[in-house]
Image 1: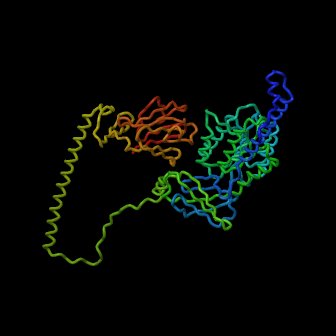
Image 2: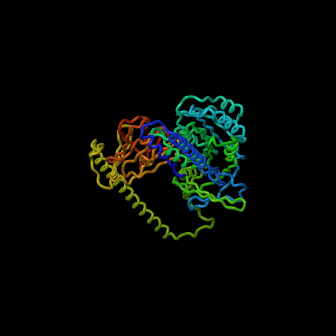
Image 3: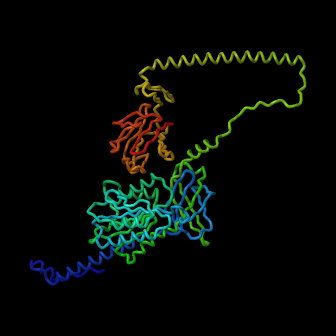
Length: 537
């Protein structure tokens, strides 16, 4: 668009300090016209940025179990074959089942911003959309309805009763409050991960946008969590009267795009049933169950390649996920299928009578047996004497060390390892050679042993919720863990832990620590609501 030409008379009038001329009025109209064009263009851009629906074969979400994984994919139609490859390993046991064949095919959370920032003209539309979503639910689908401010408030949880759901929706009031969608969604995802419930879950968000602030969770943290464990998010955006929330609306639609969901601007949607139909497209998804080969169960992140053939066409989709550990599977196999024990069996002589030996041979055998017995007795006696001498020598060395062995100032030779028993609580302190990098720290979640962290002890090991803060052990699934919660290191051969002024403190064996404390192999440290057992190898 060409720039508007300003009449020369305008400048002359302005210099004279006179009142606004006809030229100035024309320029004001042109400015308003420009703003109208600009705002219209922005709306067109937002409409173009609205996320599109998932394509056939797209992975919407997944579950990770002890014996396998389940991928929930957008229906590709009638599949002729389904193949799966994890890394370079081909999975042999793969099966597909439609969601409609499951007892609870899907769990839906309808999350509504009921603040006064939602325009009055949009509020009846919002309730109409919600009631239509409930009316078009699947058989067995469980629906939760919630409103939110800085916390989520469930009005109904996991219900299939239309009357109960409709009453909750019709009773929603819009009130004066601040809303923090980022924090609420992050906490919902953390709760779902902690529940470890099977089945596809989806979220329908009706709001005026995703906030991004310096306190609480950021949108980047929320995106990262959804990338690690995706759930489809369907977003209905409400534009405020002065369109001051365009950035927040963009963030919300980005959330839908990242999760293979779909988004709509309420102002730009003529038929509200289009939104209901878009959400219902997820109802045709399928569950693909994959038995994991033992060689891929190593706790690392691996790429999963899914190859679906339907209608003569082959679709290839990929997703990354953390594999479970094989240790649990091996432990179960040892419990239920123990390895056969080695048993010594004495073979009885055959029925045929052996030939009688000459008398001279018999006496020679008895003499040799006697000499062998005497030699064996001498060897046993010598061994006993040597063991007693070594025991006395080691006891003497331990007594010489005395109380000084408890202090860190004592120096040991390289490669030396000493174990000393303390009187208090019968603990064992391991004194190493100072080359801490040669040892590995293991931290195992007591509530979920599949979560086992392995970190080389080459320096200070930082525990917390934020990978961006440099944490080597990232406990992002526990929202009660601080971004930088505590640190573990080896000092003078003693394993130590320090609380980094975490809001929920750090506990060792159930006792809160102030500053730093000693820990041992077998100690249980508590960060947030997670209990981690310490092992050192």
